[in-house]
Length: 487
Picture 1 (cartoon, rainbow, N blue to C red):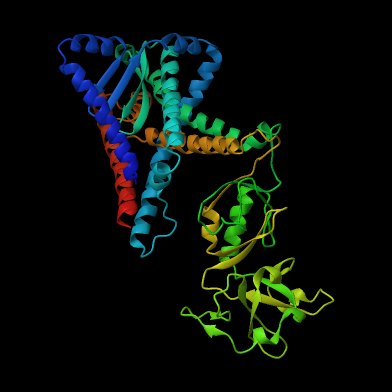
Picture 2 (cartoon, one colour):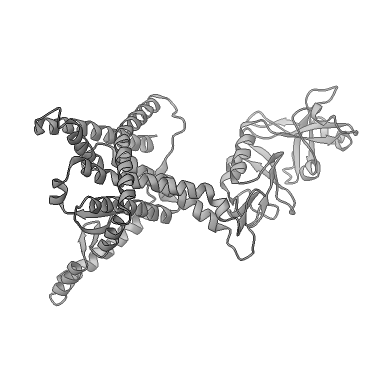
């Protein structure tokens, strides 16, 4: 869902634009000059829609269309094959997605429901807008170059903003387009989807090769570098994490990068609380006996003074199966090995027992190592630890290098992969008003013209295919919105 702040900002921007537009058009002295300026520069204004059309890039398109004729023929022919496969593949994908959505609707508690709108619009809006604009420009660039290669005149190129959605378009000479063969048309219509797919491949390759590309300036594999800590969160404070800290371990789980950090947090959250090997000499009888009481959730507590430094631990010995001890937490687990049972502590020459923190359900005590600083002891839900800290796997080699640069490149590449891929899938669907409509029409003309001689019959078959594809896409969108809003 789009946050209210974003909606207010966008609506305020549109109101300002149209207030200025109305004032200029209402002025008798400025109206003619203003409209003449809009027309000469290719600008068109309408409610919640701004469009800019220009021919200044036509030469660039023409040069690209004549760079290497043989290569371009192979390139766009490969794009044509990919586009046809993507057209049918998108129907299969949307059908499968629709069935999965329906099964989630039937389930009492849908699992794995993702709300991309919250992520996309709540955070990093600049990445979203730039990535969708780049994806649209590359999409239309493919159409334009393919058209010029097939001797179809290009009238111009343009960009637009519809409410909050930025995009691009090419203006082709329709008469030329209708005169060429269906196979040539198919190369042009499939070029946009093909270029979006190749943009995904390039962005994904760049993402995978980023450690090698940035190797002279950043190194990886040493840990997860802290780039931000949410103020007031359990991860902040004098004994918490700070900007520039390098996290190397969560309990006994090594951290070599950000993915290891997430894997370790998930592992600790889905497994029972770790224990710590403590020498029996540290267990004083006054701390151990007769002081434990049940919390409301059924867990045990033995530190009744609400101390911030003491913690209740449970353990067992050869005599009793369940004992409790209130101990100073940092001194107790400092330099201690982790354990599950007393057997794990039998390797020491000094008698030791496995003490397990007595915590409320789902909460954990997690020891975070970030040398040379003292270990951070986190107590709470592991998910709070995961989302209160921002990290990167890239560590700057030089002090002046900003740690956020690799994160920005990674994030932008991920947006490019997801949004350009989504644009390719949606445009490949045989649906009215999308590239899939023209791809399907050209495909049917190229394959059925010798089998079904009547053009009207071929158009009727195409109409039913388009009707089904449009209904499939609309059903996915409608059910997807219902799952986001109703649940």
